[in-house]
Length: 305
Image 1 (cartoon, rainbow, N blue to C red):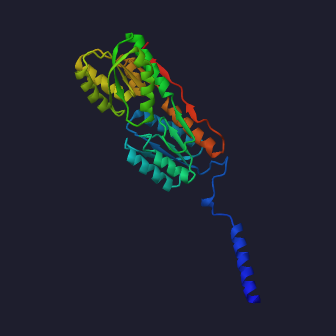
Image 2: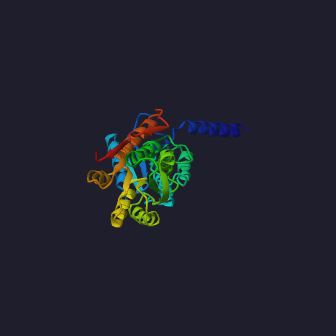
Image 3: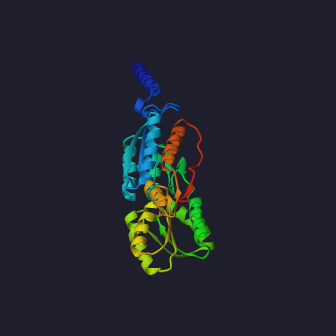
């Protein structure tokens, strides 16, 4: 009996000792305020667009400044690939995720995967429809759409017939820029045609060619980004028509086109600043600081005047 009691006591002591042991270093959560060895996972919708290249550069620059590493993946405008990319980043043990969604609905499952293992998520330029996101760092896309419509009304007057080149279906930027544009256009302009060109320059050219053939009296075009706007200009020039074009982003090619008088205007964002602000927000989250639900980067309407 005594032997049995001794065995039981020894076993109990072992359990107590085991319970007092600290977990291995890799299993410990990052200490608040200590950002050493932090790895950021950055998923970009496409690096084939200069806007998102600038966004990535801003994030990398700020991360380097703070001593953090960044692992970058390019979804190539493929929502399924982006979900897989994010899952891979989680497997690599990133400490925080920065996601620029290709599709706001499709990315939700990946955001929820991060939520399930306690990895904070910050979205850039576009939101996620579901899952917990610490903050969205973006321009006020609704306001930008309104700015574009107001400019067209100012230049052409009320009632002018216009076309709209929409971005990727399902992207929050597409919804929000369209909403802002229609807030004004539905009251003061005649939106004769609209079609998606997936934020792509070549598709913008092809879609614009089709719209011009079916709508001979279009006087202006609002494109949800500069890449589509620049494609639209190519189609318009080939047709010999005089159509005012307004883009959105303020990328280098678009700014040059505005200076040359080819593009009437662009609602200019600051993509590098968006990347920078996203890393700063991620840093604050890791330090345990509270961040705003939305962090806005200022917009500016760029024209030749």
